[in-house]
Length: 323
Image (cartoon, rainbow, N blue to C red):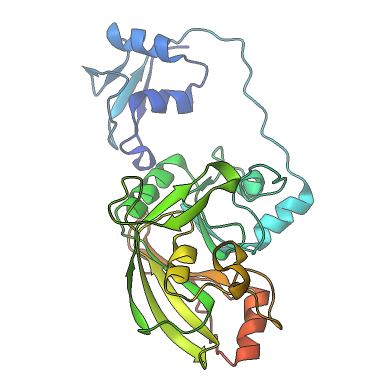
């Protein structure tokens, strides 16, 4: 292999040099790369670099002849046609940078004990010939329906992850809760802590002085109510704790309908589906190529049936919009 000079693309902005090599030359070990950097054979814009050097768009990387390898590239995994059709049916929006899915309730996002089917295992069905497998940018609960954001490339995934960390992403959930919160709108400022580990772990409302607790903030507003029996809430998590909205609704004294884990027997009501009534309704985020993207997901079937029974009006679901 002769010496190559490769220009860093916009999609690879801020990636570490060692990760860039791992992406393009997976057979090259970390030790071998560090030796090439130490001896000046790998350079960035003509200057010496270390494995931890951050790359910028437009910079050039000098790639010397690399150690030979007999390893063959791993073949792309094949996915059952049924699963390909299923994941493609979830797509609400897609472009060269992102994909937004409408995940059904009951489908896990990632694998775990006892989980044999999940979104992550199906993502090869959305490659569309790309060398990159779409990547999950965030997670929602298995029993929550609605919006799930994917990045088409690693660089886009890094940008979107930073936007989520920086709270530049607006997330709106709809929930049907048992009872009616008082007041009818506000901010829930209740720290949360995790008890246990793995699938059996639960999140609890914690005391403010608890060293293991993490601050958690959620905005809520009652959009409609069936007397004091059931209410329709709009919820916006301002932090991203596990089961945050479910626990925060319970701390209001109004657990989410169909959530026995945090609502107990109070979360069950005859005549309504014993499924979690929590839906990731809308996402508004900075688009990696500029502007903002807003996507809205229609209600899941069991929540639509509950809305109809209670006389709540879902209204029109607007199409995706990039501005």
